[in-house]
Length: 104
Image (spheres, rainbow, N blue to C red):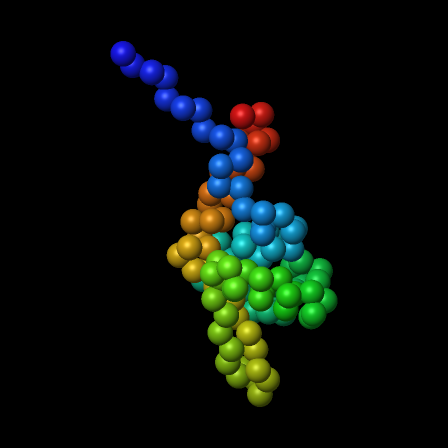
């Protein structure tokens, strides 16, 4: 007796941490680049320094991104990049959003 496959829950893979638009934007940028500098992410998301710092800290604490600091032009700069786990979470989150939008 064959049973029909279980339908996929439309919100399976939805990541609540990525509900904040700026966090989703950061993850999208990093999914399409090797890394991005703090100032660029701040510019893209139209965030203040403190707000961007909080978003990056939350994503880093969750293990979705890694942060590295280095001096450039005599100033300390921060770069962010996706971790392997972050890539999977982002891909799963986008797939869940697509299912939701498709009415699935």
